[in-house]
Length: 361
Image (cartoon, rainbow, N blue to C red; front, side, top):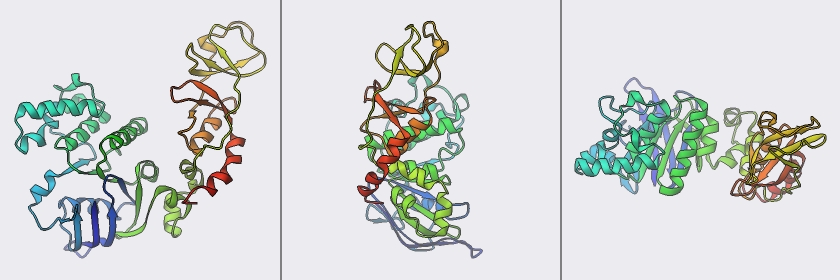
């Protein structure tokens, strides 16, 4: 657990970067700091590992005052991931990851063994171990940065805009990987971003900062979207917050209806849209009937997103319906096999009931 109690950072020129911050980042959860440039979110995170010294107030990590001990000792228990990964360019990937274990007294062989394990943990092919950072893509470098931060198994992980320098597709993949890792490792993570969508996706709780280092609102993502405390938070969260808020409403009451299907090589059916399935009943895309002849791979139209029955949200269900060329979303089971279809009308009809059962509504 990380506790800010009236923490202020005032620089020598009089600039107040963080102003009387009161906040508790819960143990084993992801807390996201988000806000515009100059709002103090990075300064707040860097005070946790004493890269920046607080001017006043009290800051505790697992009950211990961060100012009471040796900064180097403090940092050995805190992983730190920054933008552009901060890797040593002259060291191989395995040696970059093994840096901290070796520094804290593990032998080089043990450090490298740990590094190889972590490469697999963060989704890196072990064959990359002897490459250098400039031989990896930006997304791969960020994975190395995460592995290095985890190498000493720290209970706390600080992440300062770690995914902001990569393209949107890679960024989404890294976000998903972080959520997967967190479900396995249960670290106490403080994550900094300027992107409210990233904050909403990753955070168990989200802290929105104003310019000048003032905390505007600190809440669970669903509450932040449904009940912003003032105009600043409302504007920062964005005009489409109602749609994004669907991501926190359960889709359990949406009816799963029948779906017309066809397999590759089958004779083309009559008019209308048909989901094209492989031999294991997994969807490949859509086919618009009425053209005659067998259904070939070249006839398959991309099918949009899929909705997994029993684990989705209203937002995921609605996106599946809206992204489908047929106007009906494909619902699949946990193994990816077709279970039926859903419509946007069914999603909207389920909305009032989902709101009634949502504690944030």
